[in-house]
Image (cartoon, rainbow, N blue to C red; front, top):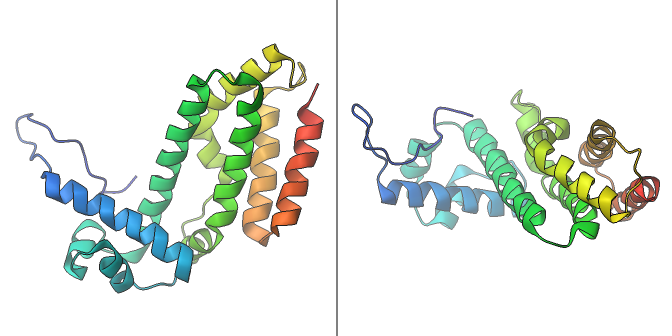
Length: 196
């Protein structure tokens, strides 16, 4: 996504392998940034991130020269983790409920990271749930197909309809700061409409 993304170590000519300690530092910074931003909001200082990660502030800036780059990397890291979770759902034999778990998880991530997404928007970087769902589309399609074959989801629900509906309610929850009760109610209504 940005020039600070760490490529895997390579032995190709002309490419400099990334040191293991640099990869560990980057990972610690992202983990710390996610925790700090969740606790203090996206306006938390990079110094607080460095302290939580146990690295010098210069190390943070070496990996992420600007705060918007750090924020964007945290969002990409969240998405990568969500993709890993969804892949596990796809590989799980519990096909009947995995689609509902997927929708619930996307809603939770949207709500939990509202402050982070708002801060990114202030820097001119907008986070759209639909964009994230594009990366998740193959897995979501498979979960939908399995749920339909299991008879837990209506046969006429198309993948593009599911993605559009889920993106719309999650974007609304994220943008407007829906309460937990409203998020739960919106998912219940979505699920009632999806069921056979």
